[in-house]
Image 1: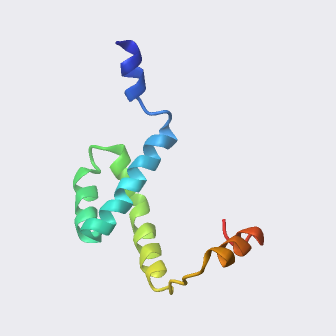
Image 2: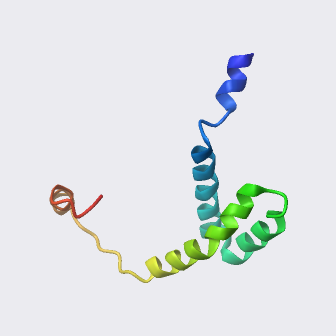
Length: 90
């Protein structure tokens, strides 16, 4: 029974932060910045993770709006491999 309880615990603080950040980004895509901001503000006085996400919220929204203006370029597999070999892509 103790082993099953240990499996449910996250690996580290960074793992918890990464899951929360990913969830916030998914919620931004699904519900929009207004509702996510309202949820973060409403819960930030009780929850430290919401408080930390609230400090990152403006940067994430601004970056998302900036990236949405960039054009999407389609490439074939050969060009993609060439770009990866030349380390133009991470």
